[in-house]
Length: 209
View 1 (cartoon, rainbow, N blue to C red):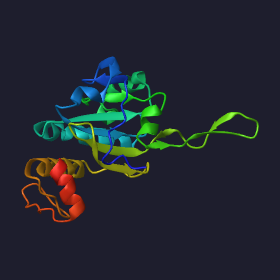
View 2: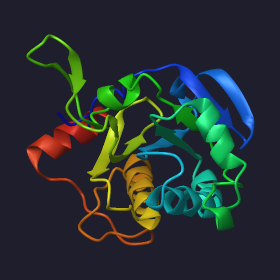
View 3: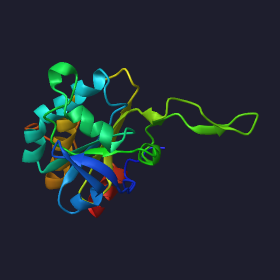
């Protein structure tokens, strides 16, 4: 089920912030009423495609911050695993230099609640608990507004890396809509004109937001 137009699931979990500090109770609640949030999942620490994505978000972090957007990452690894990976240089396959928070979803409930968990638990014929998949996160991305409502989501299978510029474009589109009350047509880019909503359903939504 899509989370679009619904409140983002709440959680409190351990995370690594500023590239080195482990905090035990990290939550997206700190951004409510203050910032938009790009919250993205990646499958696993110490892998190959994942560091390219984390570094790509870091390279554009100033652009997100300029738009008053917090970037937060999450995987099903432990906070200790995150911390260890952060100590490795980019040349060694590490993510040293990443400064935005990386959440540790060690019990896999965050990924499950956001609909990005690859796999599920089941029982075999002997009554033993088994996993039906690798139990790691797909490449999910959620754009959450200041009210905590999901406005955009994207979920890719494991081999398919995301486009950070597209995430920025969606931030621009959302903020344009919020500021101007105009909707964004296909291939809209910052600086382009919007459209006045005339369809009843869209018009009703605009009148309430």
